[in-house]
Image (cartoon, rainbow over all chains, first blue to last red; front, side, top):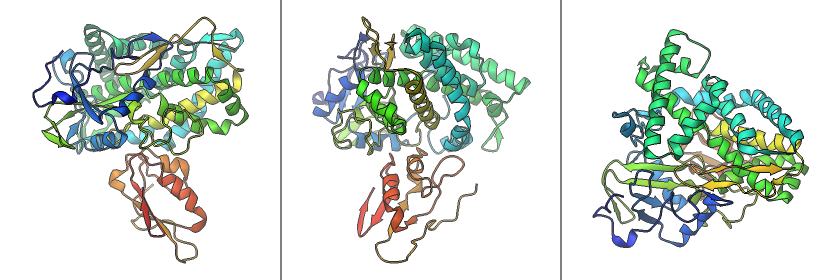
Length: 401
Length: 88
């Protein structure tokens, strides 16, 4: 644990951790997002001295409005966290996440059209067919473990197809992602080196043997009037890999867990499937899985609080999404909530590039599951395993019908 | 698709008072596309999925749709000017 910096006033220090706090440790039947809602009863900004997997302290911004200010101001609150530096021994920025404006714009403009709302609509039929095939394959069993039997094969399948990576290596890729997000510091380092080596080989392969896929597009692209470098291409592949591999699957897990525990919500959505779109937004608000971290690029003052260059600033989406100043009755889950400007995909220039695809995957998954599977519940004698951390998750989600 | 020139895209059909105008703060747009999801005929997107530049005059019969779209922006990039009131 790092010492509390001298510029942090003692009254702003709180005993808080995304990893070990109440409701954050892996536990059966937990509610890690809900466990953080109580932060709104405390100070809007506080300092948690040991709040990363590797023992760093972070500022924690509680209110949605403050998170918006932080995340929109990338000049002051940089997204260049040097995520891979410790593991690799050199900095290899994931792109565009770890490139700040104005340099960020060129990379983002290159990738935006690949995941625009219009492009995502063109993927709709294939994604829906993938979901239907998986659900039909397990329906007659009368029960399943949602994550392994549906959420991961579906979400990761969509993702690997987009990246042009072989489906046959799904379990291997998921293992790397799991270690990187949830492993010990040693396991994280090893997973990062593995992913970077893999992306390096992929870049080399697609320069040598172009295909109709993402990495071929990247290595053939121009950025700022010059060809993409290998390091940049690796940084782009690595980001999509870590950002998209299991986030949608985790969201499907939290969504289905909620529906399994609320049969009346299932009944309403079955009677009126057009409500699924709003329901997915509300569940994104209630159960987001990603928290945003920034690093102060310079000394700054935020509402009288001194933040020094290099300080880590954490913006937990799950906390902003339950801010009573922006959401009526925030701890009530209302699947028909209309006024819902949640921050599950962040605010500011680093807004989740895959948000449009993720939303459609979640809608498709819920629509087809409700259409093909009768009323379902948590399988008797089981409870899902939930946990906090840098990326919140759910495992062992056994359903029966 | 080329971005349209700046200026209003939808004009008020009757030209009478009580015109609702949506001020587009394009530099705040981050491509969430929630406005477009809500009201695609009012809020157009470019090829990257960001809002087209130019403020939008809204005909009376589309006020509700325009309001819902503007109020769905997570970045507060759409400012509603209606009957002397301003909100985002």
